[in-house]
Amino acid sequence: IRSLSDRKISRLVRNNMAQALLNQSEKNPDLWKAFLSIIDDPTQDKEWRIFCMQHMANSAHHADNEGKQAIHQKLLEEVRNPDAEFSSRALLMLDELERTGNAPLAGQADAFVREILSNPTAAELSVSTALGLIGSRRDSRYLPEVRRLAREPRPAQPFGQRTIVERC
Image (cartoon, rainbow, N blue to C red; front, side, top):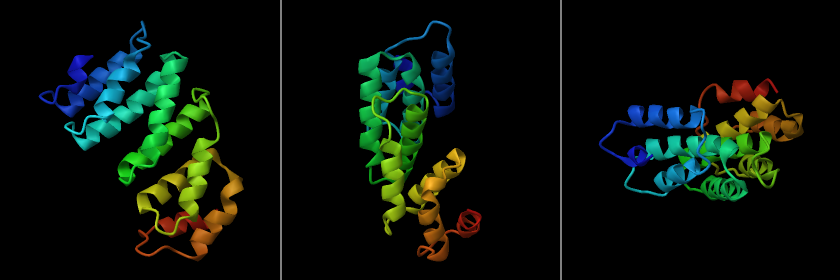
């Protein structure tokens, strides 16, 4: 497990090691702790820390209640990260945790989706992630917000997002 934080090993190899650890037949209920420590380590490269957020969420299936609570809390913290790459991945993983029944409190992802859609200064990546979650869930509760975004495009909106939104 220590090799996951070894910066001398390529990100690809560490990612493969993480997948192997997650897929082994004898599950380690404390594996999430290794991923959490990497996420919290600013000396690790950003992309690896973001990958570890996904691995941490995937390890929740085998964590005890304390582990699930800690994973959930970390994702709630990262959803508020000012870096949209971290916050967007955290939102995706929070939604996954809630949909698989591994979050101690459901509905948090929905609250963040609504917050992002109503925030005119939200990062484009955050808005795209929120819209992607809505689409993957086929969630019609957000149609008014999605239609508003289609009618009132945001400044510097990437080409293509409007056409996706208009289909709703």
